Amino acid sequence: MMWFNKMIAAILPFMPKSFVWIFSKRYIAGKSIEDAIDASLKLNNSGNMVTIDLLGEFITRLDQAEKNKEEYLHIINTIEKQDIDGNYSLKPTMFGLLIDKDKCYEYIREIVALAASFDNFVRVDMEDSQCVDLEIELYRKLKKEFPKNVGLVVQAYLKRTLDDVKDLEDIHSETNRINYRLCKGIYVEHESIAYKKYDEINQHFLTDLEYMFKQGMYPAIATHDEFLVKGAYKLIEKYKVPTEQFEFQMLYGVTPALRKSIIDKGYRMRVYVPYGEQWFAYSTRRLKENPKMANDIIKGIFIRG
Image (tube, rainbow, N blue to C red; front, top):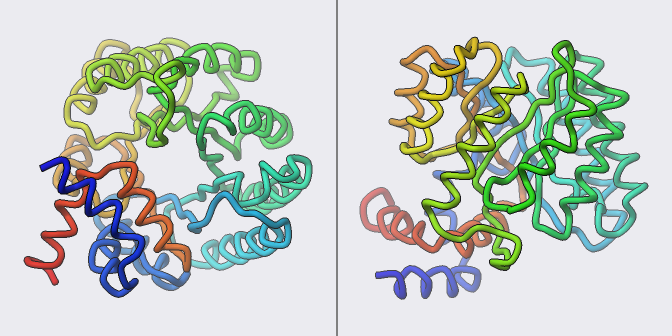
């Protein structure tokens, strides 16, 4: 079956967009900010917080970066007028991280400053290994100026992650906690720098999470893996972590039953709500990274669509 999934993943980028949308619409709020608002309000009504993300990454021209910055400023100004319990996520390569890191910082700083003016929060997503050092440097600078309004993503499958978390302790304190989103990681990396085996990645995810709890950091536990959810429950109980000092996070449209079960236990849940015109690239990239999702395409065509 795996060969079939990989075949679907390989040919999907060459299929008509209308066909790909059958698969994508389950995992993307839509193409417009109005779609993101509608999805966010529905999620709020069912007990979920949200984080809103405009799709797009790895741009090739700085004029694209400025356009993306203006769009994010528009997003924040629009969302803050709505009664939405949510914050924002962004990818630095969308603002030219690999072209001009100083200009990227300037654009993202402007976005974080606007969110901070509304007493809100921006999450800096972690991208592939070529970006890690640059994104940690970016985060350090932003947190110095906006200590309560910016967070970072770390990826458990990278062998360096726990060391990175420890290295950032100099900007963490009881009154100014570091806010991490801890996820497994989705980019294809060489085995010399990334764990590859399922059990190994899970082990390091829980090791990283335990360290964050022990140090009093604020982890956003981003997983759809029931094993990791149960492991998180055990650590929460072990360290008697108050519910306001962590949250769970999941992707839009993924494992809704597991998501509801976490909310029903009284834990906070935030859903990552992606939207935008770049949905096609996002969908095909996610499928290449996880060919098992091809099963959902088949279900979408023959069952839902």
